[in-house]
Structure formats: structure tokens, C-alpha cells
Length: 242
Image (cartoon, rainbow, N blue to C red; front, side, top):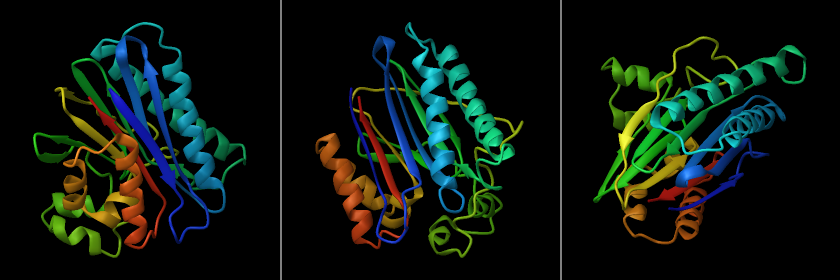
């Protein structure tokens, strides 16, 4: 397994409120996650860092290879803990009201991939020449698409395209769904914030992933491309090849 992740402030935002995590686990497993913080001043930074730390703490306690069932439980537990930790900071006055973050997380086991997503960061899989989005956005425009009121190709131009409907820091008891997929040798997984896919588009992502460059070179190229197209948001990408 090869993996690499990086994050960039972009060309417009005054600070980078994105964070990422790549954590090797026993038995050749890997946890990868991307967090896109939101909130005024440093609040988005704090929310994303708090969520990242919660995931790291939960999964750093793993000392033996995980079963898919145990892995799914840990993804859920880490997500709940991150949500509670952000809420506690807000209640204590250490973060602003409305502080929160997205999370998109991938737990790769030897034969199974587990996913959990809150917000509009995404996971893509590139397999045998096809790019497939593995996560569903928790967003206003996605709800419009689901109801047949908006075409997918119209979403990038919608004035409320950045409005998300769920985030860590306000999740509460909302249900969580862990996706489970098979893993094939040669699979490529891309986790990214909306600052990447929103600037480049999925056809571009597919074309770059098809070129089979090194993981670090691919991440660097993707981030540079998002900046070349305007860099209006923070940009984060984590790439994993099996």
C-alpha cells in the first residue's frame, strides 16, 4: 500500500482550516481522513484539529488486526467522540457558536474498505479506468438533486453549493452509516475537501488518476491544478493505492 496526503491554503482564504490524517494500523491496515473546518477566525482550524485528534486517539489504541465489524464500530466511535469534543469546546467558550468540521474517513483493511462521511468532503475510488464517488454529500444541493429539483451538472454553479446539512460539532444523535466495499489490487482511493473537486471537476480527477504517477506527485499535481483554476478554498487531498 502506498499513500500520501497534503493540504494547501489556496490563493484566497487567509488561513487553512483543512486538516488530514493518515495512520498505519496493525495487520497492514490504514486509516485516512480529511477534515474541512468551518467557523470564523481560528474556529474552523480548532474544530478540524479537534476532530483529527479524536480520530487519532481512538485508532492509536488499536493493537491487533481489525475485523470489518470492529473497524466499523471504531469509525463510528471516533466520529461520535470528535462531535462531542467540538461541542464541549463550544460549551466551554473555547470556540465560536457554529464551529464545526466535515469528516470523510476511509479504513482500508486487507480485503475490505470502510467509509464514513459527514459533510461534503468526498472519497473517490479509481478502478479499472472508472472513477466512482463512494460518499454522498450532506449538502443543500445534494438534497435538491435527490428530489429531482437540480441536475448534478448544475450543482457547481448553484449559489448555495457550499451549504452543508451535517457537520461534526452539531451532529448530536443523528444516524451514521458506514459503507463497506471490496478491495482489489490496483485500486486508488482519493479523499479530498471541496476545495479540490469543486475547482477541478471529476473528469479532471479521473484523467490524472489514470496516469499512475507516484502518490506524492499526484497529490502535488492535483493541488497545483486547483490553485491554477482559482484556488478559492483550502485544498486537501489524501491518496492511497493498494
